[in-house]
Image (cartoon, rainbow, N blue to C red):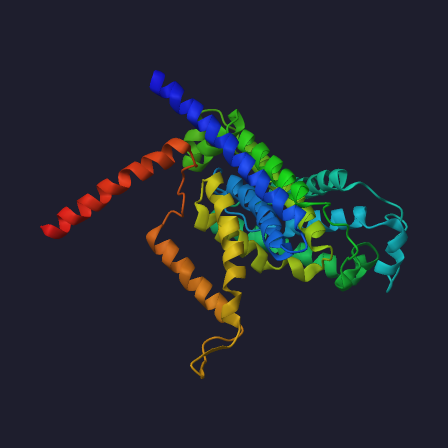
Length: 366
């Protein structure tokens, strides 16, 4: 009993120190923003992608629904935030080709309210398309949601909606977050809310559906209602993340939300571990930072006067893909699998390292 209390106290102290360290690092970066603007942009993008990955994991990992419509919901959220937050006096310069619709000409909302509205718009659309789509399973569901995402992107760029979405010209002059604390604070709040959902009675129902739909239904769980709920909740937070991305980029168009964006989110979820919130967050930061760190591979390299032909634009993604394949080969369930981070687990892993080396040596000696 005393050992358990000591461990609990130790975990609380370590968690508090970790939060303090993160806040200290963020404060230092914010105080030297001009010097570390590149690092800040990577961290902010990673935090936004972490929200999308966790929301996607709620659907794919915890409910067992294979959806590929994240880019479409992000687009809905991004354009909602863009339309609501662009300063009214600058809208004529944004919609300079075909003008702006009178319906949205004077609409304006602070960024906090705009993000919530963005999530609600994405959730409403998800509720509507979920009625026919969620009756499909596995690959058919993935294809249907992927098609939906492309339909949304096509509608955004269509001439019929150019007085609202500005068509293929996109939106600019979107206000950015005041500082890095807003980005990380909103991302942390979204992830915390998803965690609360997962640990609620609804979350347990989602997991039951993932494990065995027939058994879950026999226990009284309404399959369609809970699938629809998971789809709507996931889409809400994906829409919020899309709005955050619009504020991060300050300029968006339909090309921002291509199918490749959904594949990036799926990659993050798989690398981190399907069914692990910690894994999704870790994967978002590793994948985003890894791509940026490897940018030197896109530049010509000369060693001893000899030009290395492999180092040229595009080689970065080749190296990145190879590294991902190595990770998948050694961690087939992702970096975290279905586990979550805990101090007890970390210390247990560290204690087991010497034993693993001893077992390897004994095996080699035999």
